[in-house]
Amino acid sequence: MSNTISMLARLGKDAETRTAGSTTVTGFNCASDVGFGDRKQTLWFSASIWGARGEKLQKHLTKGKLVFISGELSTREYNEKTYMEINVDKIDFAGGGQSNESGGQRQEEPPVPDSQGDSVPF
View 1 (cartoon, helix red, strand yellow):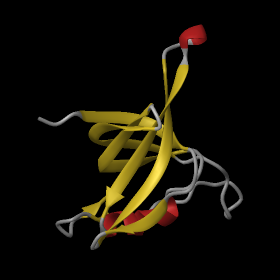
View 2 (view 1 turned 30 degrees about the vertical axis):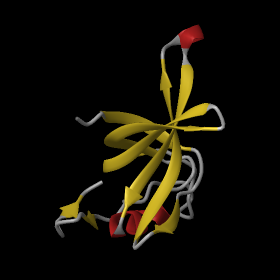
View 3 (view 1 turned 120 degrees about the vertical axis):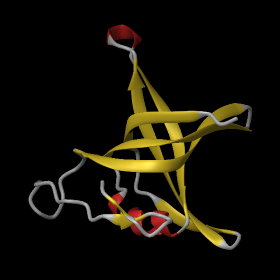
View 4 (view 1 turned 30 degrees about the horizontal axis):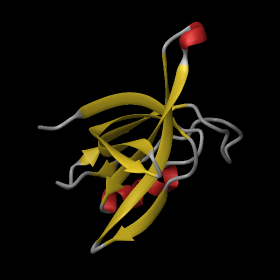
């Protein structure tokens, strides 16, 4: 059985790619708000995109970007704290974020091939 989650979230810092065994993994932290008014709180998640797709997306996954992600939710314990992690299956750029070199105007993100070689629009 799989736990699937979908959310609109903002990246807390630039994504980083590292090697895990014989493959690569691109990781980033993202935040999503839940609740309203005085009960509003921000939840933080660690997210990972495995393989070449993550490597290609890394330069676009920068602090402040708003993304819609979905994937498998899991938790892990470290130093008596519980961390929520998402193994990302799908990611879409929702716009927003910090201004860029084009004077703050949004640049279109290029399509990136998925694992079957098809183009995945953002």
